[in-house]
Length: 172
Image (cartoon, rainbow, N blue to C red; front, side, top):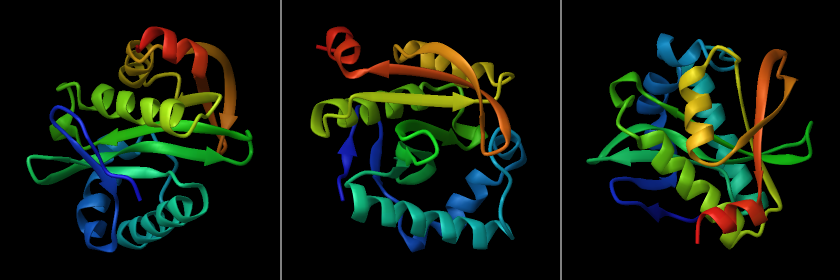
């Protein structure tokens, strides 16, 4: 499983020891309002998500990472294959204490670069609720462009994407 280092962050696969910190981030009310609802209690849902991500790393060679800053898990970001679309998404979520510092953009950029340069993925998308302007601004900063509205996990969403050629042209 790949570990990446950026200027300020370590992106590493989540592990069972992250369960409490991950649940505190992912199911924080200000984060959870933008994401699919938890299936079960937060600790159980976090444990299940960490196992799904580990399975993705085993099956595909990629998945979401823990975002670690100054030794603390502040969120997750990475790549996730979405079978219902047959494509790979770039995703991120951060604890509200970490909002507004550019961490989502930094982690998203590393994930996209890994997906396009290392894995050779042809297209990567991102989705969010229409009202999540902050995530849409991150998508735009990363070079993704709005394409369409979609329903994703029963949630009305906006779809942004970028293809490998455009990524390589904008990120030499």
